[in-house]
Length: 534
Image (tube, rainbow, N blue to C red; front, side):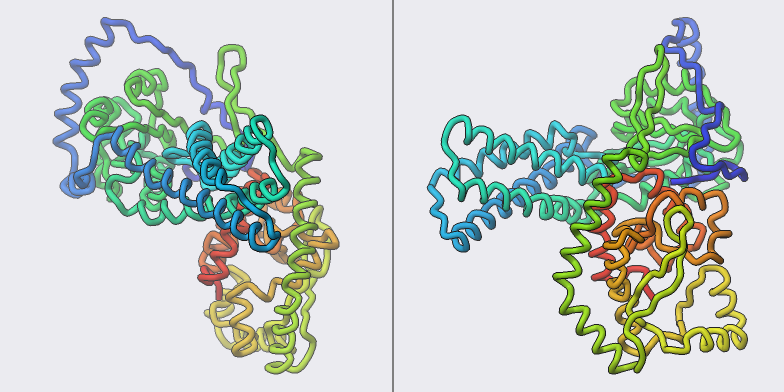
């Protein structure tokens, strides 16, 4: 996601040359001896500089050591996967047996055991136990890949060692389709439940007390379900910066000289290097002192690039970052458009009774047209008419202008976010309901079908909002606007407009079909719990 360093905001895709460091893998023995002596002096000094509040934050509940935490974190996920596969396979077997009148032999139980075993093996190979710090989108992709591999292996073994009848093939197909939905939802639920437990996840330390390090600490402190549990922040500099503990209420643990002591004290398995601000950085020092940590994650100092699908490449002995723009891939565009057409067609057919109910309800409460069309900016800056169920009174513009002139607070809200918490234009009853549940957006399925919109993308904007996107507007123009998007599932109206722009930019830079699927799943939850809607 776009970020800022200091007071300077860099456009997406810009790399500061200060992020490229010369690394030295070895430290001469004489320097190492002197450094150890300096470390002991620095540790005593750092311990005296820790504030009382920081000491209280550093105190951690009694929890198992690092290796046991990995085991305890993996067990609930493993059991969740096994249960999801069993339920999906049994549901598929019984439904196919009843509806298709297919006889299933007793060997199905042996195949079920093999299927669960394959799932656990492939999930381990794909890094899903414990999947510490893994993005939900990446976890979704890995889980679906592991499930497909497990079902594919069982089917292949059956074809090689026995004969499959049509019923068994149908069971495998239905079981897989149920699994790819049930398994990620079960894993998400397990993470939400277990995240509150002290044994969940792996402990980490943030190396870097600048703005990026502090933001990263707060993020993982909130997102405990991801499994990275930060114990505190240490300075990148060899000596702690003066008065660091008084700048923030976050637990500062001193300088990087204390890293080895902290590793033993808190059973650390992760360190995240987050340079930023005015702190000096010596990557050879960082690499040397973090040598005993199993996992070291290094963030660039001013690197504002796609983060989900980046990978490292060796370039003449130097690490390079390979960035793939899936939106420029012809196959990627075909997949996204096919995905939109198929799902929009099925949704229009399946939801037609709901369309009728909402239309009658609107007519009953507010005479006038059922649908409302408004010009919006689409892909490549082309204008189109976006369709909604009418949730406002017929003379909505006049009502709005009247209230904005009489209420300065409403005018301020409208000027900042183009939204009102208590909108006087909304039809009582039905209007609030379809807006909070996002049902008013359903007619946009037609926009998707005709190619003006996508199921997932930035929400369509009006021309007056172009100025608010500033340098991010070219990113907005690259994709079709969406019925739902990252902003919709990340707080929606509870976020500021600048946050909305950053979320839209993040989506465009990190697009893949997996990100679309993740957002669609999150949209269902957002609609059910009415998160961020008013």
